[in-house]
Length: 282
Ligand code: PAF
Image (cartoon, rainbow, N blue to C red; front, side, top):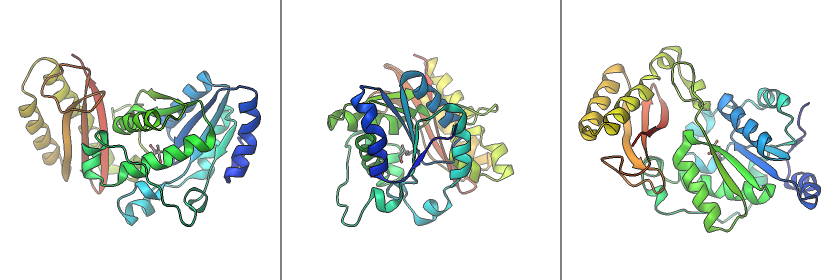
């Protein structure tokens, strides 16, 4: 059954108030739409854990670095609603820009530390946009639980920190990255890849796996990084923003997996920025 599509905060609050009064658990899955199996795995996790589930779709202008990137982001609301039908979601919240950022909106949520590395460097302002919109979605939905993919691991840690620091009473769940059969992490941005670029894209996780293997077996991570960058560039990636091993909890740069760690990668292929991360075995 199709979920009701709620476009205003008033409609959302009218829907959630009875659930709150009844003490129900409310799971939220924040998305920007263009839903794929990765998103649907979050919806399934939310359905398994909570008595009510809200999926939000909002292409948040504040987290894009350029107007062109915002304009080209895929928007597929009708198809998204159809994909959600089989999950028995309780509400689809699809606010517009005026609803989220009304005239005079003047607040930005900044999470320091965690946002000063990786995408925080390469996408200035991105995490302020994410933290601000997610803080709003958490308070608007009154959710008890939120579900995010580990595909955007830095985002997950930033959101956790933000919710903790702002005393938002919500449990943030990280769910495993869902991959295509060839290893490419599912992402709405994959839709922007040409056929040729799509065949090359799995090289990013392949090279990251190779680096992670070196790190896990006590090898030279710097040499492995140089090799991976050369291979990606030779294969046609235009540039590599980063390929780094960092600690899971505070994203400290590591040269050996002395604590739970992940390999983080971001690279440009035919005008599309791909990001990924994989766990490094200690
Ligand atoms: O991961 C995303 O799709 C977005 O960054 C999020 C969390 C929905 C915030 O706009």
